Image 1 (tube, rainbow, N blue to C red):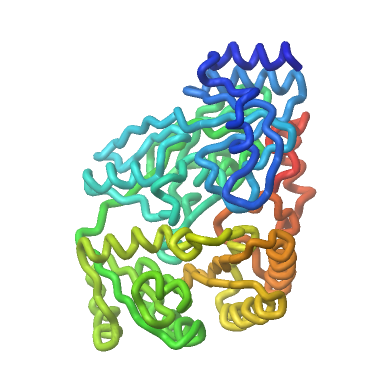
Image 2 (tube, rainbow, N blue to C red):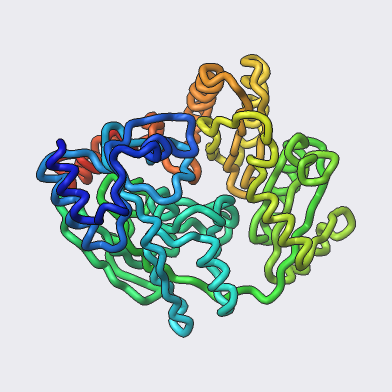
Length: 415
């Protein structure tokens, strides 16, 4: 093992290699409550370094886990006696304004990219709440979306090319620069969660930035009323419809449950439908609201532990109301402090489990997993990670993985 670690250190240099540091404890977990065992951490700067690392790992059959910012909540970056490839130093990107194309390395922070696009009048619609710290490589690898998915789709809809390193060290460059692309090879990496190779660079299409923006805030009496309003307004195709229950809305300065409806195009029919009962936010006030919304989980639980293990479910829209009621019922039975927020326009729920008792939280999560399956639901946007019960046709997935990773070194046991 010593000689193997020395060979890996030679690839990135001593300053970017960790094997006996307390930092390995940090790299052995992510934003989920789970814990693994990182053997070493390699902070890479380019695809060539990744290629050399994977060749060594493949020859020695050593497990490899790719990590961006570690914001995943499903345990996707948890190493099980694996080396970690940290991509955060790969943080360069270039915007081709006339083509409306972005080429970004995997470690680019999403919020930084969005800010630079905005300066150039361009827009990448998928935006996670963790945009200020999450990386674009992790976002693509998890097939993420955040808000705006009903109207604009997920990050998969904007991925047009990729540079990736396969498990045996081969670098593949699927370098399209057009808004329509043939084939599907680049697409298999979106949602692959580091199990097929290492994404080192992504090519994304972007769209013109809308010139107008406003947000309608409506106070509502519970989730069912929020659902009815959402069902009424989505026919006008607002950018997003977000829900927060009262316990969370109070942290935002409101006195009841709220829904927030984002509008980028001065939709007059939407305005006429909402103007008599909504608070309308513009400019800096609106920016502050959405920034705070992005950190709602942290704001809600300053003095307690929040376990994300039951934090991302999507169900058929017609079953949203009864699903929310069942969530509340299970939480009450199991004495769980539950707070719910939702990308309501896609019936994507985030039940925030507030507990200092990990066993109780895990028990609740397992019950919600079973409930989601009964409702024909699944994981909405945060990756499957350790929740393998949500995989459909796992045999087919294994065939694809075997074609690329015959030694099963890439994030084994995931998806």
